[in-house]
Amino acid sequence: MRRLAVNIWKRVLSLIVWPIFLGLLWGCQGATSPQGEAVAVQQVLSGQELELTGIPGQPDISEQVRLAGIAVPSLAQKPWGNAAKTQLEQMIGNQSVVLESDARTDQGQRSVYAWSNGILLNEKLVAEGHALTTVSKSLKSKYELRLSRAQDRARILGLGIWNPQDPMRQLPGEPDTRE
Image 1 (cartoon, rainbow, N blue to C red):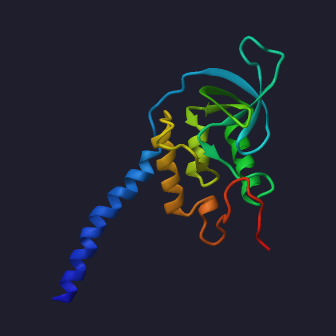
Image 2 (spheres, rainbow, N blue to C red):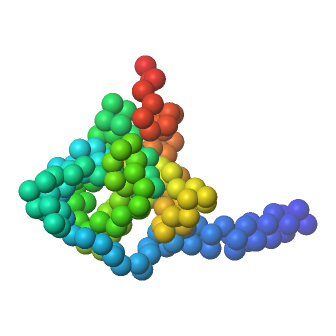
Image 3 (cartoon, helix red, strand yellow):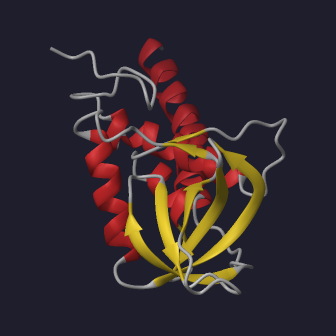
């Protein structure tokens, strides 16, 4: 009798847990297309900051922007900061990006959602465990749900900063306290 009860609970849990897991996994695949300006990336400064050129109306001026809705470990937070920067460089390559303005500034820089080849870079960094989402329900961000699902996916899969063998134990921007 007890064995039957255990098997029933296993089956019930699998019917509940697997659809939730698959929903999180597939939930990161949004169908939104970018609506914004295409600009050239002169340099990736960190896992969250870009230096841009070719800005419409200002072709000779460069501008630094921050990716909106996310917090990325600083370069001093090794190995996570460097891994985030490297991943962002690889995602962009030598291509231009399409920027959607967030209408806010972050530490004096314009906050943007950046797209490359139809991929929302902010979301991909979170989904791969290179960043945390900072979007709260009170901000009503356009991509709030996508970023939240991406973070849940990375945490469940133990990716990047969520890796159980080497998790990041401080918030992005805090000094590394590991010995």
